[in-house]
Structures are given as structure tokens and as C-alpha cells.
Image (cartoon, rainbow, N blue to C red; front, side, top):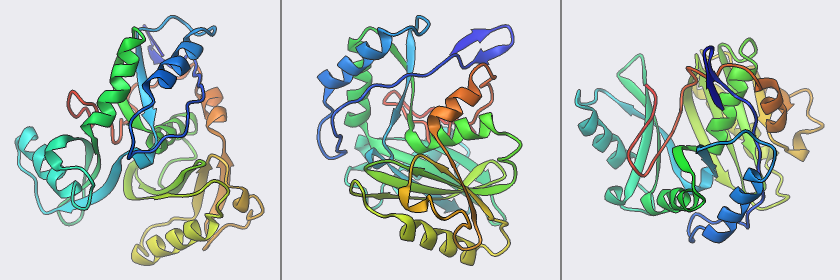
Length: 273
């Protein structure tokens, strides 16, 4: 991305493979640095800072409900961190958290992402050793959602589902008026048929939220089992879009104002409100 007189413009994006990753192991720092070197050896503009997009399964993300939150930001962050950390494998004091608050009919809804500080620091250290700075660390599915919203603003107004699929996990988000109202992530095996899980998630959310007009879903990534489901699931029409196409659609457009949902950093939370 490049800052210009017209705002921040997305100039391009590149990727490189790294070995299979487990959130329960250590980051393969050497391989990660080699991947960075491969990216930077290409014809991209010279960069000083990078945004890291990590797998959803490396964090815990959840939608929480509160009657109210402390007015002090640091106190509110601690309350959110302790509630989000319930059932997580890492102690709250060893975690970093990012969140977005949304007004609800009864109180406040918070979309929070929490991660092991050591995992985030591992990514940041690998980038630093490559001679670059880290601006933010974000979650893959949420970064893809932001690209979708920016590249196709007319299609992503109102309410819709966003499904992100990879070889190791899939996630389903219910987006209402620009905010994540529901989130589910499930770790999967390569080649596993996840279509039944996705359909059940659609039906469950619609059943619990009959007032929401959730009649469309964007599939970000490849879900082979959904290829022949043009008619959709549970009354939801499906549209598959590759992330690389979003990059193409988004090239040259302003990225100012995109909500950094679930952004986390070892140096502290940096989530947009």
C-alpha cells in the first residue's frame, strides 16, 4: 500500500508458501523469513512495513455480549480479554486482544480476537529480522472480509454470510450493517467435506435471528463440495470469490476507513471502533 494525496492506495499483494502451521507449536521462523525474502525479491514497490495475516486457528475469536463496559479503555480491554479467554488454552495475562464494539438492542456486542502473545511475537520477530516493520497483525478471514467489502461495496451492504475456506480450517461470519454479529471457526483436515457444517451454521443462525435477511453468502476461497450448490443452502444463495480476484478488484482503490476487525499486536490492541 502507498500513501498518496488521494489517501492510502492498495498497490498490490504477494504471497509465498510456508510449512504446515500448528497454533500449538512454534512458528517456523526460518521458513517464514525465507518466504518474506521470496516476496520482497519480486517486482513489488519498496516497502518498510508489512501487515501479517495469520490463520484463524492460531487465535480464538468470539462475539461477546455485555450490558455495559467500563468507560476507561484499558479497563474495558481487560474485561473483554478475561471473558474471551474462557476455555482458551492460554492464560489471559499471556494473551493479546483486539476487538470491535457494536451497539446492540440490549447493551453492547463485542467481536474480540485473542491470541497467545508468544505466537504474535514470533511473527513480528521474523519480520523484524528480515529488516521490516510490522504495522498490524490480523486474522485471515477478517482481512479477506475487509477486501470483499472494499472491492464490492454495493454487493456487501446490509446483511450476508462470509465463508472463508482453507486447507486447515473454515470460518463462517454473519455480517450485519458492516459489523460481525456471529463468528464460527472449525479446524478441518485437507479434503474434508465441510458443506454440511456450513449449511447447519446458516440454518442455526437464521433460526435464532428470524429478523435478519440472510439470503446470500460469499465464499472466500475454494470449497469443492459447494461447487454444485448454485441453488444455495437453507435459502442462502452462494457466490464464490477468490481472494486473488479481490486483490485485483481492489488494486488502486482507497483503503482508508476499512475497519480493522480483530486486529491484534503484541505491542497492544489496535482495533478500530
